[in-house]
Image 1 (spheres, rainbow, N blue to C red):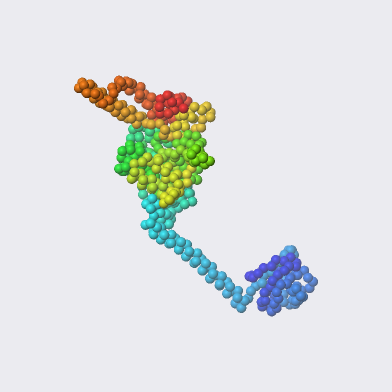
Image 2: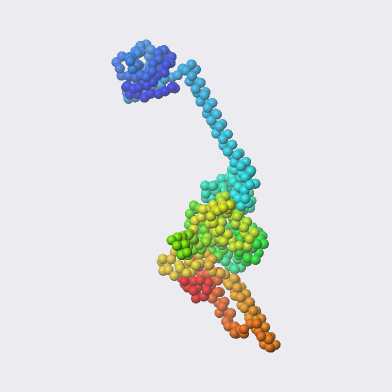
Amino acid sequence: MHGPTAAVCRRGAWCAPSSAGAVLHLQRVHLALPRPNFGFGQGEVDSCAAGPLVFLKPTGCVPLPPSSIDRIKLYDSCAAATMRIDGEDDSTGKRKVGALRHRSALLTGALLVGMCLGVLVSEKVYLVTQEAELPEGALAAVRSRKLEVAGGGGGAALAVAGGGVSGGPDGIPRSTAAQPRNELEALLRRVAPQGEVMIAISNMNLIHEQSLVMWLECVQRLPSLTNYVVVAIDAELAAYCKEKGINHYHRPVRIPDSQKDTGSNHAISAMKYEIIREFLELGWNVLLSDVDIVTLQNPFDHLHRDSDVEGMTDGFDQGTAYGEIYGIDDASMGWSRYAQGVRHMAFNSGLFYIRANPRTVDLLTRIADKLGKHKEWDQSVWNEFIFFLSHGDYKSPQVTARTMDYLKFMNSKVLFKQVRHMPKDQQPKPVMAHVNYHPSEYISLFVLFLCSWACQTVVGAVRRRSAACATAAVPSPLPPLPPPPRVPMPVLISPLQSADKSERMRAIIEYYIKGDEHALDRFPGGSEPGTRR
């Protein structure tokens, strides 16, 4: 039965249309009525009145003759009644209304589909037209968005595969296509299916120096830390990793002219931003780790993942690590002599977690572009693009930043000048310890040799000139020099040998992993002998 419904108990209000027929359905009394042609508006029904049931109008009653009742069916209780008025034919307009509703539903659905298609097409056209007008640093972000709109792998939609982590609400999605787009994506699907990976970028020299060997030793001892990759930038290291069964990605690089005289480590650091960008463009978040880092706990268990970049700080206390307000006093300004500023120590460019989204792709593109043209320290450029404010025609990449806990992601200044001197039961155990404040043995010995050679050469040349002038009875242009002090070379080298980077890494492993409580004792606090704090 169809039509409006009114619930009543013995006596109740209802509304009946003017029609040629009706069906009165009571829970206790079921009346199938013939087609009486009477019409009335608001009224009542009394299912317990004496005699035949009647329809009550506000001004009176209309009796129903007993002959009009075809059948009566009694139910269990007289608690409620439901009345439905069954409409007639097209003369009532009911079927026309139903058809109109059907057509309206079809038109609404077609409109919604058209709007969705229009949005997709207009966005794609916008991205194509905007690409020619955007600055070079933002092109990568637009291309990533084009991949998201167009789909990848032969039209397959891009999405976060298997759940996992993402680059945030606007993160670059990972492809769900059956066929990976390149060798790197195939590797990441196998090694880091949840969408985040820890990488170290290295060449074979760092195997010879043992730092990469110790880095791998620490990472591989953690059963839950399997999503790591060594990015081998030379064929020798790639062959070594393949032989040892180490997760690796062979990515040859060309050192730009601007970085050729900066040393091997700085040249690698300058090129790493292009490499990391390749990971982000595929939709994977990256935890970058230099190879002079000792990993003691799974770092992914200690990340917040609420910012574009989480960076290790070079700070060594609350103020230098997380920021502080400092004062400036300029007496010449009178009553306004005092002013305030904000400062904190730099993010270390050797340990950070970066999420895959258009802002971070833009950030890395700008850094790589600048380092490819100018000879600058990559850590300075890294901090410049993260923290410098937009001004004038310059707009920053607008990335959000979080500082890692400096007692968990610990630099070697904090470890050797503070933590190791604390009572054993009060010492925080680092998640990762970065030996960034202390130089390597090779650098120290080379600098010593170079300085020693230069001093001996200059002093020898001056003495020979003085002697020649004295022999020829010509006044010497320089006063006579006292004899240079003779310091045995072993005395100069020995303290630095004990303080080199690799030895400190090995000592940290012995202290935290092997339980040698005195492993750190022989090292000075700084890089200079005799310093403890």
